[in-house]
View 1 (cartoon, rainbow, N blue to C red):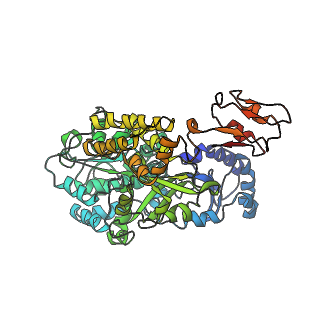
View 2: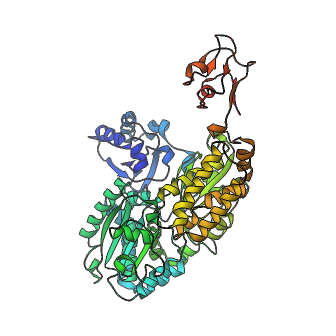
View 3: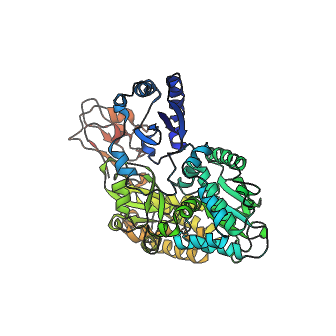
Length: 583
C-alpha cells in the first residue's frame, strides 16, 4: 500500500509537511507500506489531503488530516481495516468536484510524485516527445496543433499553431522558446499548481514546441514568489537532462535543446509578452511597440515564441491522443478544456478543469458547491484585473472566448473570483483599479495617469464623497485608456469599471446620490445603531468598542454616538441579541 501526502503550496500552508513527518514516524517498520508525496489535486479547501493507494488504485482520500491522525492511519494500513479512517475520509465532495471535470492539463496533478521522473514516465510521460522525434516533422507537429484548435491559455486565446508557424518560418537565429509563468492575476494560481505538481509535463510540452519551431534554448520565466515551483522545476530539469530528455541529441534524435529558469521580480506587466522579453534581457519590464512581433524579433531581437504554462501542459496529450480528440471537446469557437482557479465566496475553492462550453452556473454551483454560508450569488470576476464582473443574470453564459467577451469580461488566464451579496461592486472595481494603477509600468500616459485618476474617483465615491458627473467622467476615462494604452494590459484595465457600471450602475448611483452602500461594505457610508427594544444592557458591545462610542449602564439600553463611531463593526459582531443594526 502507498500513503501519499499532498504537498502543493496549499497543502503545505495547511500543515501537510507536519503531517508527512508524523506519518513517517508512525509508518516506520510497517511492511509493504511506502510513504510519498504528490502535488495539488485541486481540492484546496480540504487540505491537508492524504491518499491511500493499492498500486494505482485510489482506496481512500483522507481530508483535513492533522499530525495526530498519523497513528490512526498507520493502524488502518497495517491492519487492512480502512474503516479506522472513516472520520477523516472524503465522500461526496470527490464525486461532485473531481468527477465532473475533464482533466488534460491537470491530469497528473495530485496523482504522481512531481519530484520523480520515473513516476511521470510510468504514466506515459515523454512518450509524446519520443513519438514526435521519431515519426513527425516539425510541420506535422504544427499541423496537429492546428487540428486541435488549441488557443493560447494565457488570456488572449490566439491560435497556438499560428504563433509556432510564424516562429518556425522566421528568418535568422538562434530561435528561442519562452514559457510565460508570470502569473500575476489576484486569485489565480493555475500555472503555479501545474509546475509544482507536474513539472515534467511542462518540460515535455516545451520540448515538442521547441522541436516544432527549431529552438535550441527554452526559458521558463516564473515569478520569484513561487519558490516551491522553482525548486521542483529545477529538479525536474536536472532529471530530464540526465535521462536524455533535454540537452544535446535528445533521445538520440539529433535534435538538441536545453532549458533554464528565469525568476521574475513579480511585475504584473511582465505577463505581457514583450515586457517579459525586456525583463529577460535585464531591462525594466515595459512593453514594446508591435510590430515587429516576437516571432520575428523577440528575445535579443531573435525569432521567439511565447506561450503560457497551461498551453504547453496540453501539448503532450494532444500529440499522444490526436488533435481531433482535443478538438472534439469544447465549442466551435473554443476547443478543448480550460483550467480555472475558483476563489472568493465559494464553498469549494480550488482548481477546476472543464471542457469549454460549460456554463458559469455549472462551474460555480455544480462543481464549486455554490456560495459560502448559502448567501446569494452576486457576480463573478473573470480575467482578473483585465477582466470584468459577470452578474447573476448571466450565470448561464457558456464558457468560451466569444461568449465571455460579449459580457464585457474575458477568459483571461483563468481566475474566477466569486462574489456574494455582501460584496460592494464599486469597492470591487476600486480594488482592481488600485492593483492596475500600482502595477502600471508607466510607459504610456493613458495607463499611468488614467488608471490613477479612475482609482481616485472610485476611492472618493466609496468614501461618501462622490459627486455629480463622476459616472460620466469614469466612462470617458475608460474609453480613453482603452483607445490609447500601449499594451493589452493597459487597454483592458478599465474592464472592471466598465462591467460594474454596465450591470451595477444602481450601486454607483446609491453611493453618489444617497451616500449609501447597498452591500453595507463601505465603512464610510455605514451608520451603526442600537435598537433599545432589543438591547438587554449586557454591555458586551461597549466592552468591544475600541473608540468608546457606546454608552449605557448594565441592564439598560445602550446607544452609539455616530460622531465617535469608527464603523469597525465590533459591536455588531459582539451583540448576541440582534440589537445592533447597520444601515
